[in-house]
Length: 191
Image 1: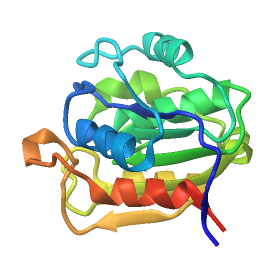
Image 2 (image 1 turned 135 degrees about the vertical axis):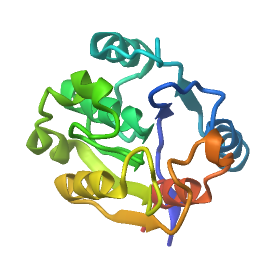
Image 3 (image 1 turned 180 degrees about the vertical axis):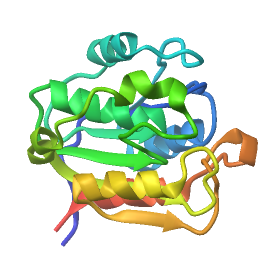
């Protein structure tokens, strides 16, 4: 029998050049609020056009309340920041939904190398994770899906490759992302 987990806040960390009002983020927040009645905070990451690791770490430290059973959704660069947060804090049973994510320097966004130069200790992150999933699209032209597939392998988690959607951003008219909501509801229920 399925039942709702005791869920603390859900956080969404947007990516490079984005804001909380972009892409599918407002749609998801509205759905989570109305359907799940769980608080969701889309973190306004500073200087997203020229992100700095120290500023992004500090923002997450100030906004995210460390607790067990929290869920962090990351998009693109927000995936690395989600992993950095988990690695740097004493948390457990964290759910991660990582969309168009990567954890290594990409040929398409070398300007974000500051985030990828520091090698994450995945072995320290894995014990803190309850559930995780990585989602990408086969036609992603910003973070080619093989980077996301590699991230899923590092995290030993399912990799969902959608047939289209590119980088799941406004530019490509992606204002809803039902697969993220589906994975979120799956994570927040248990046998």
